[in-house]
Image 1: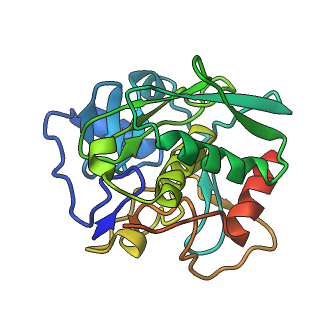
Image 2: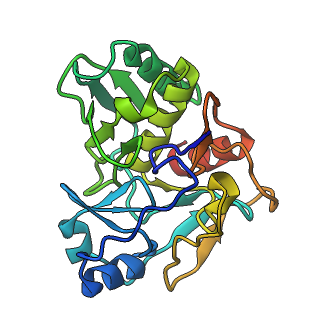
Length: 251
């Protein structure tokens, strides 16, 4: 079985919501995101399986879109990052989520903190700057990108869809969504079939190109924590390229 980290974690495609106006799809594409399989979401629009684009994001779109990449299957970031470094981001979890997710969250945050970045994370009981809440839909989890120098404030976790997965898999899913919250896009941005299977799907590209991180490999990156999809029971701690990308942005 194939599940995708926060995307619809299967190899099947979600039919594009025909109620999304064409002008909205055009704006989403201009921002550098795919306009395929866009779904109406309670917080705006769900793109690329697990990323929330709000109406405010569309209204504030810039013509100066740049993407950061590593290699052919590469790490990307948005133009929005967390600022005010060094900084500790607090993360809380709703009591409506399984109690076992608390340990998975600790593991996910520990992966970041082990890198000694200028951006660190702290698990708090309530009122976190990033809050994990219960979600429902065609995704395992969903989140968005930073705004105003702050991380995206909410990760919706669909525990019913995740099912009975090992702690390391849940930790990988949560670390992936936190990656979006601090500005990372999918590693297999140019071809979701790389991790999801099925037909190749290009998530869309902006008109400005990309910035390569010096010293990183140019071949495929099969184990990145930011790949679109993850196999059932799979663990995805940060690999060498992931650490390079995180250090580049937040060291």
